[in-house]
Length: 434
Image (cartoon, rainbow, N blue to C red; front, side):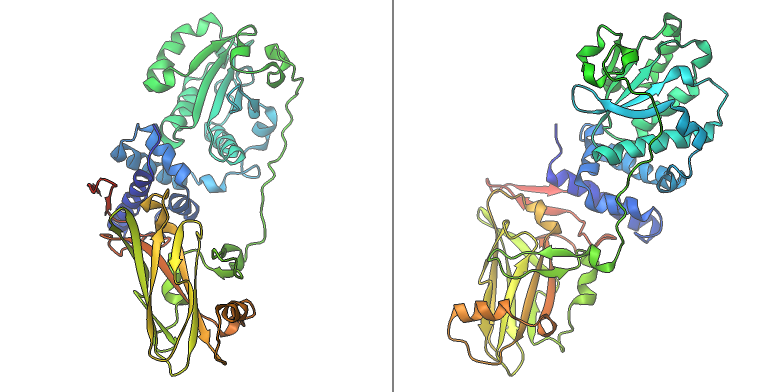
């Protein structure tokens, strides 16, 4: 079962509400990168819901505890330069090839691990490094944990290490496990395995598969299997540093292109809602008064979800206006461009197009642009040409977020509005999300 957009939105909102209620700030308690991930990654939040079979309360607890664990363990500081280099180059754990479902294999060469020979804290950091690297490699898709137990004995059995691996999947990396493949496990481990099996949730137990050279082909194709497993890959482990994209970060890099459906020029606007108030001109400075001043409020009108924006020319000169949105395929804006004479006003209608869920509008934004006309224009063609050549320094810009009727105006750290809201279905049945 896949969570709906409403459920993902609700989990995000509950997280930020808990953060504000318990700590009074959305910026200090967790690592900024994890807060940004909660704010922006629907896929990550979906994994928590799937992990707990759509149980919102359990998903929220796990999300919260995961962010705490990541901060306490300084996960964002773990990299090849901060992990024990000897452990990295030994090759007791690494990522290589894929299973038949296309999931990366996180391989544990158990014969290379002897209990008590490694510093356990350093070993845990090594494991986190490979978990994080696997997540980055496949953008959070599941992985298969491959225990290569060929040529192992009791001195290679480390219950504490195994339990740590299981707990990472169980508590901090939701819906991250595709299979647990156990290759050529010696019979002397049978008793230990019964204990290990008890640590696993029912869903994970069902993912355990015991394989040998003859049966491995059911889960890993020959060209993806190492030669020591009976496959065709003659790979010998050698640590290769991860290549990360690290572009120079500038303020402009965080801006996003806002397109309008008519193909007019691009205008850059900051994507964060928190920038809206500071970027919008004051009412006295702007020639065009925009109402509501902060948000386009959408409400149900029969089977349609609509909003309106009122524009008033408060100056003694004629102005032209134009409206853009981050999702031109999602909205119909009428009129999207026009002229207002002194003290004249107009009402702009915004309609959510069919096929888009109401909850998806909460990250969308609108940009109202305007400037003073020097000459009287007689046609829409002249107006369109004028906008194509407009001097951006003379264009006033006013940003608007999107809200659903019934929402409060409290916002999270990244400005995303998080509160309960009412959605009317096609059958006019109100569904309350708390």
